[in-house]
Image (cartoon, rainbow over all chains, first blue to last red; front, side, top):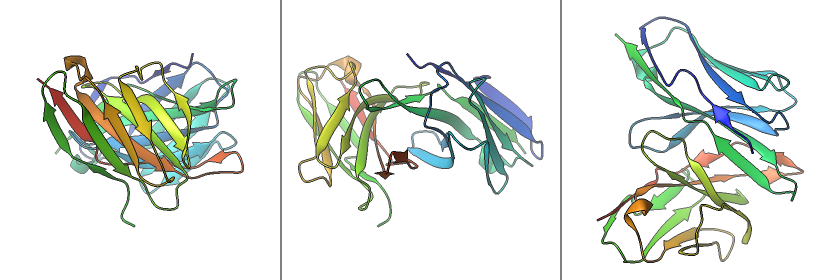
Length: 115
Length: 116
């Protein structure tokens, strides 16, 4: 069974700092990994998707990396801003023995950027 | 098309009542997913559809839960005889799956269910 862990559960940083969020998964046979942000009481907003054949993806101040062999992904946020405050979730997708898509989310890292 | 929409946004019901939620995916997306999220947790997968076919159901989806996507467009999730433990945010997502490649999932705003 795939397990996805995100550490730390919460993080508080001053505005302007660069930061790294971590996502670990136990089954390296994944199709892709997707990072999301979630604001309180809202749905999820997609940030980046990394296919299993890729090592990293970039979008603006965000950079996500994937190391399948070690079961790890990181989300790097450059020059953090108060508007980045949210919960960040990673989700891994794989195909099970029956050929069906399986999606497993981590529990998230709650980020607070202090002005 | 402005994204995935869900209705209602909030639902308060008494224990034992039935509720139905609706999800309208992004129109060109062939896959539709339902998740449940409780406070402080990540979303938990419930079920998903490829067009109108329901391909996988989580063991979380008890007999009281049923989902349909009759014409491969919108989907409904029904919970019968609701229990207090059903209180959660129910999230819908859609994506495109083509040639064994799974693309990004896009989520709706969710339906928050409170069972009293």
